[in-house]
Length: 240
Image (cartoon, rainbow, N blue to C red; front, side):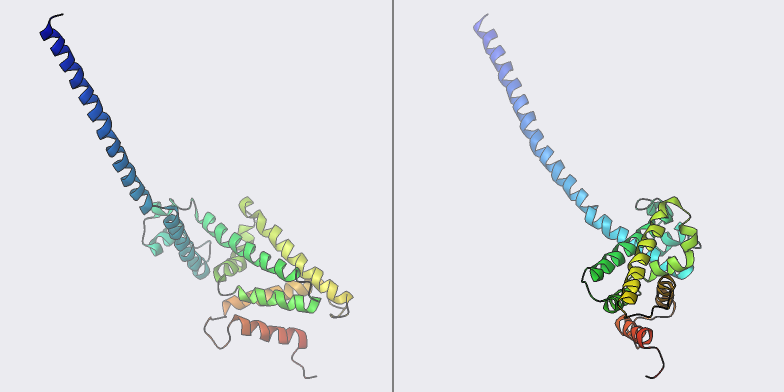
């Protein structure tokens, strides 16, 4: 090979090395830039923000369920209240049943946990019943929609397989109350001529029906309402 041919070959090699090096190096910053931009875009639709939107939709739907009833409320009603298209709602929930499921399951998880907390304190039956009553009244404001839906749509919902837990949860709650009332009868704190299950159901229904007329910010808050109820329940309205 001549000297000129050798120089041309070396030149081509160096040129190719510069192209390869430049392409490789320039690709890295672009990859980082894309990655950074990608992170920023993901930030706009972050899980925290999606959760916040979901929670907002649940609250709006809960108010509609309480006002119009679950069966009368449509997905379109919920979307219009949220100021979005019905199709956008399906990005968060596949149906209105999924929304009310979240509302009711959250309610039962919270109240059952609170009930168990009272039972675990080992108080006497009278104080335990009082604690359960206070918890029940304490749910009237934060869980108004769930309680209203249970009153209005219980029979409709429990017929669906996905809501089978409602009956199971209610049975568990009933057992907590009934067993405590029975313990009070054994200890001589409660009259032995009352039916424990019937007594529980009367207490339950009179507490939950208060959601229809109880207004937060009124003369009595939920704590005051609970104390007044306990006074009537334990002492009656007759003078002693």
